[in-house]
Image 1 (cartoon, rainbow, N blue to C red):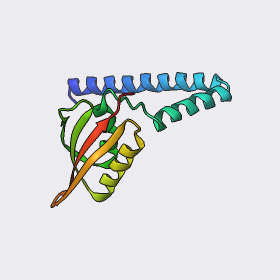
Image 2: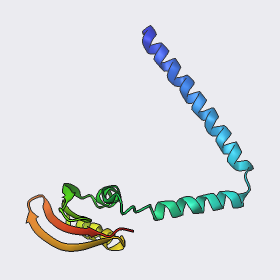
Image 3: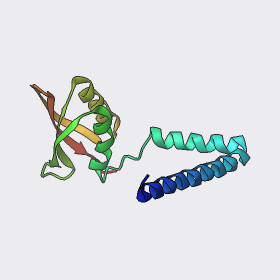
Image 4: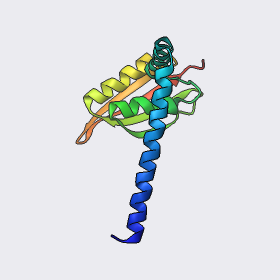
Length: 135
């Protein structure tokens, strides 16, 4: 075995051992906590995951999650020219588009003003005019 390869393997073994020791320390620290504390922490974490922040001031940040989860492809996103109105174009399969529209309907600041659909070889292309009310 060549010297540089041997050193890389030794460094990787050392990093693995250090990671395992750090994990063992974390597990010991968690084991020492009362079960109620862990349950409260887990409940808060699950609530934060279930209801992510939905900032009306940054609609692009909010749209990223539903786009990714629905498997949709963003084609176009820009202001409409009127305050609080945006043009959104995306490509998706039927179920992905349905999921995206459900996410928009569940987001109180957003209101879909217009929707056009076009069937293409690669899926549905949807164009939406979205009004976002200031909170």
